[in-house]
Length: 397
Ligand code: DCP
Ligand code: MG
Image (cartoon, rainbow, N blue to C red; front, side, top):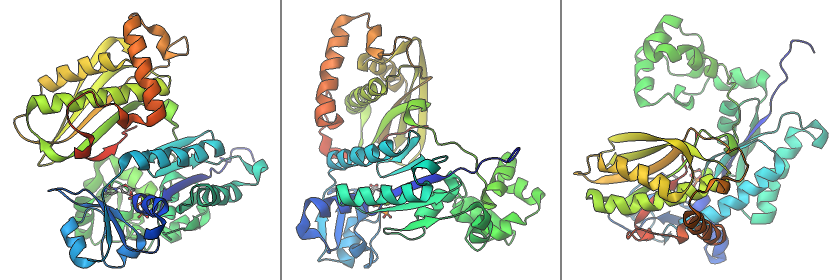
């Protein structure tokens, strides 16, 4: 119909109890048991736990000693990040075989744009097939949400965990949202929720009916956007990896790092992992950003730009290290991240072609082969053992 915008179908898939489910799959003797995955250390917190363990009140980010108290008979396991990353790749491959538009959000979740796939049986059929393939091929359980936009799809996948399948249509979105607490809208954190409560606004339905003046008081220039979300409207596109605005890697440490030397080694690793990702994506960039989060969660980012495109580990590291040297490292560092932005696809497709330095190119290629084969954890150029890493993320925007 002319003038009428065609409806989109966005799928959000989120694995159920991801790390714990992988452990149960790898160790069948743990199936059906409460399984808690978490770091064994001073900072020991629960990364996740099986649904069996959730019945005891255990949840992510809870101190391990609390979890032990709640359920002493649970199986306690360390985090095997390399393994979860490997399984994550297999999941993402299923997604990429399903749709050309896949946006990975974290190790266990992604958006897929399934619009216009009527000839393949329609969005619902495809969505069920994705869930079934994950079960059939990987023996893992996923929850999926199918909706006309990202906001509703993510909300939907969370409604009937585990192994949920929830479809929300544009017509039913507003009434479904109305009784939900305002916190269900991403971007509304504890503070905004508290402010809204002072105006007597607790549910999304109340938010929709709130006077614009009030919304502007709480959300400033984002007021319109918040009201749209409250009505179930969201036009953000699914942005596949190739079109990512930045590619990078960040790591949270078991113990805060003290001083430049300790951080230097980790930045070397992060630069290498970022470079590998860039080259895999066939991209190069100009700006390198270093993110430093201190033990008290105070976070600083610093950026530097190069006048030419860079994709080699060494080039990324040189800029990142320069930034690190300018950063105050006298207090403990909890998290470090390196990202490359201002991305471009170099003119002659393979990014490896613009090597002025053949030696550099050879070395990077040799590392790439290893990482492709064994995963990015294989190379640690710095001195800090991988065992001290608590959490890794691939920030992408
Ligand atoms: N994770 C972590 N620390 C947290 C939260 C999560 O290390 N505070 C890790 C472990 C999870 C994975 O990330 O398995 C995915 O996070 P989810 O929030 O999707 O949690 P789960 O997949 O474990 O459970 P759910 O079924 O609720 O999605
Ligand atoms: Mg999950």
